[in-house]
Length: 320
Image (cartoon, rainbow, N blue to C red; front, side, top):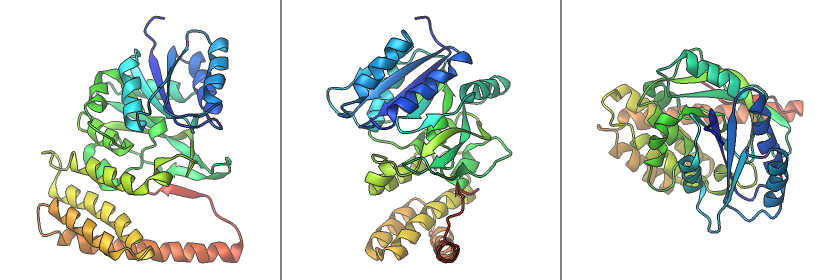
C-alpha cells in the first residue's frame, strides 16, 4: 500500500465491548482521505482478534493489526504504533472512544490553512459507559493554543481527537517510560500553536472499564505533574504562567485532600509543588486552596440542586 495521508493509531486493552464501534468510525473517514488503521492490542480481550479480523476482510489493505504477546502498557503500545505508521499525519484514537463523520476532513483542512501549526484537536461529546450523553468535553475557545495558554488552563484537549504532522512524531517517541496525553499536548506546543475545532467530532467515554483515570488515578496525577515539569523551565514560560499552571494542579490536589481527608498526602504534594515554584510558593499554595474551597462549595450546591430536581444537567467537563 502506498503511503496514506493519515495513519490512525488505535490502542486497545481488553475492550471487546467497544472496539468494533471504534474501528468502524475510523473506517468511515475513508471517503474523505486515504488512511491506514493501526491497532495495537495490548490485552487479552477474547473477542477483539475475531472482530478485527472480520473488519480486515471487509476492508482489505486498510487495517494493520498487532497483537502483542507481552503487555507493553498504554504508552509503549502507542509508541510502537507510531514507529509503524506511514502516514503524512498521525491520529490517535483510544479503543473505547469513536469518531463522528467528517472528523479527519475538517482537521486536515485546518492544518492546511495553518502550515505552522503542529496539531489540531476537536471537541468531544462525553458519554457514560452505556453511552448516555453527559455533556461536552470542553468549553469553546476562540484562539489558537500556545504553550502559555495550555499551561494556564490545564488539560482540556481530548486525546482521541488528536491529529498531528508526522514530522513531529519524534516528540512522542522521545518520551521515556509512561506518560499521559497532557505531556504530548504541552510538548507539541513548544514547536507551534495548536488548533481546537469547537465542534464535537469525537465521542468520549467517561470512566470506562479500563481507563487510567478510573483504574490508576494516583499514577495519572504523578504523570500529570511530570508533564508540567517537562516544560515549566522553558524560556518562553513566564513566572506568572508557571504559577498559574501549578495553582491549577494544586487546586485539584487540595479538593481531593479535603474531600477524602488525605491531609498527609496533600502536604507531601504541597512540598513537591513548592520545590519547582522557583520561589516561596505562596503565590501558588494559598490561592490554590481558596480555589479548592470555591470548587467544593460549587459541587455541594450542584448536588443539592440535583437532589431537589431529580435530574442531572448536561455539563462541560473542562470549563475554560
